[in-house]
Image (cartoon, rainbow, N blue to C red; front, top):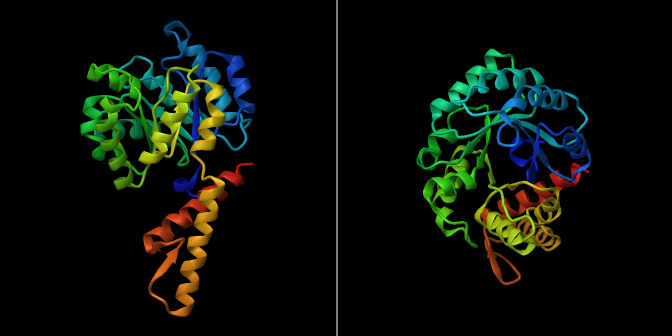
Length: 290
């Protein structure tokens, strides 16, 4: 499966200091997990959590889920040890908070390679400050090892002095800039978390908005968010049927030498066929995960 098509509909943060949570994560229907050494771990528990998370990441007990480790930020006293240990554990990716420049990405890449990280261990860059929004293009293009941009919408709202409101109007400029940067560089991008765990309708609305904007999936803070997130970010049965109809009609027109193709009264061009083929490829990739 290509990195571009790897399902990342739902990526759940799991507290690295909580052994029971790490064990439970093995049974959750998440496409990916972020085993967290940053916000979810108190300062005096950092070292113990690091050992636990790296052992979990290296265990091979999480099935097809994409396993990542969120290290502490570059400006913290734990960062170097976190990156060194994560590199040796060899997760699918290392998630780095508050990446603000291409130089930050280069520093992480250098540290991973110095510690012997395998080629398969990618970088996921968290972009969560106004500076990062304004440098998103250079961040996204900074390294071949960088695979994913992760929106840090809570920190972004804090830095903007913005309110959390339905529709996220204060954040749309930043979200859009990072989406443009990710697509220009051929990288995946994940939407930020939704804080109000009990507001199922609000969460679903934000998932739909994220998908409509073009995000590959969403980062999550609670297992109850997994099912609606997986459903909304996956092609629906109607979308799959429509994609097959578009491809079939286009291929029939090609065989017959017709230059104009319509499906259900709508003109179909090459770009629509490409979109349809991607829809089916994404659906197949999700099905392959079991």
